[in-house]
Length: 345
Image 1: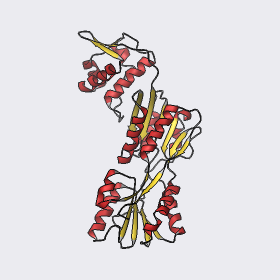
Image 2: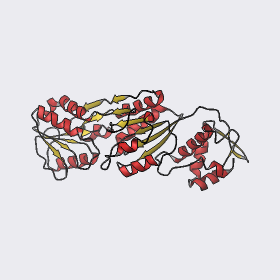
Image 3: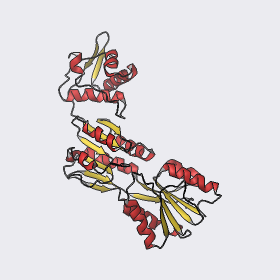
Image 4: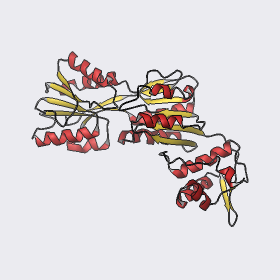
């Protein structure tokens, strides 16, 4: 095959979070699967790959090493690299789109990748809660993926996200973390029940909460978190006669003894703790703290921060199971949600 023909099928996307050597390897495997590369076809040199694809020599070499390890190519001293095996089944090829890569999103990613195994190709993108980037990434995808796995969270401008998602083949779609109104059936989802989850967690913590008179949830105006959380919070407070408030800015909110603060954003947790310490209030006795999303640090911070959290590892492994089983009927799966009581409450 001539070099100019080879580079019609082989690409590296600078916007993808997938390592470039894997993008290179996966695109070569896809070209073999599609019959665009055949056994004994000669491949470009490492220098040529580096120059045309604008990647480092180390990246090109790492990609070829990966393919050699998988038995896809061989190298002949003085002659170059050749396709050695064109007889393998089509890979599972996934378009994976996350709103951000926080500590808990990394847990989802790691669990998802580990459960899928090696014979899978993943193109991984992050849109930073920005609807315009989200739209661009989906509209620019022309690769025939076997699955589209998407977390749809936006700070603003996501009202029409369903219209963009509806351009994808719904039978290949898995939405993670939340359902989205307006998305055409059939598609699968692994979702949090935000209102039910916070209501249930606070009910479980009710005994620990009785030494406080007021519950406050820190929910900034510009947040990608579901407003169903506020509904569940209010329902609990009204049912059990707690004073309650929605805090938009923890920087300026008065903090007093007898209050419990529920935070969603990690930055707000830092500010909250700093302010509690500066006011010489005793956390877990005078002021309570409940934080969304379990992380290893919260087990250790100030003798432990109470958390309410989705089982992110379970979410990732369950998404991988849906991909592997590839069932024709869509599935809606609610993710477990846990309260972990620690000394901050």
